[in-house]
Length: 265
Ligand code: NDP
Image: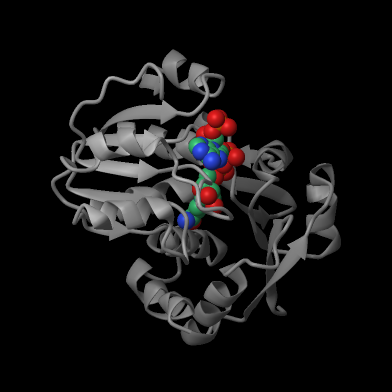
């Protein structure tokens, strides 16, 4: 048997840390694998590209998570429930799809300890899968979004939802930026006055954006709050994907010990 080949499919994909993370773990654990990045322009070609490149597994990032879902022959029950796949492995010619973003996020949040109520700022794809897993685990999640359109699905699924205009603040243990505000701009995810009502009573604030201190995290720190960016979520989703790639041969902590070096290099 030759080297097992893996990749991340996305567009753009040049910024991705996933190749470094996975290759560090392959090397450290002595697994004969190699992980590359592939800029996939046409998401409908995901399946044929996967087989043409003779891959054993992939991660999928923006904007192809829905195409990834459609390309799978078999879906993990949670991926099926949330309609988003970010990890695919091939077994005997069939593609198996998983969502590791949400369990990675759950682990990040569970490290805070005594948390029950959570306010999500944002209602995009990431909010959808992560809100579902938090609720399954007994957290009480409220979804606040700039515009009403994306909230409909959440409301239908029984979440408390609001736009900035209809929001009546309560006390939340965690306030989490689930938007892309602050990623490539200096925007806050919600009006500052609104944030100044929900941040002070919170235990901590979290941002899913990683690798930079966003305006949201800066504001939280100005209120003296502990903060966490999206690096742990990225690391944990990668470890869980790696577990699938290597068919659960290694423990979470063993993978982590190598993969986390990607964040200090
Ligand atoms: P989507 O495009 O699906 O959703 C974007 C959301 O952000 C919408 O709710 C949108 O509101 C809101 N939004 C965008 N810009 C602003 C703004 N300026 N002010 C207020 N709201 C805004 O994005 P995703 O769910 O795919 O991704 C969200 C974030 O999560 C991204 O920053 C991404 O990088 C990050 N992420 C991090 C991961 C990690 O491992 N750390 C993994 C996956 C994602 P509206 O509906 O009004 O347009």
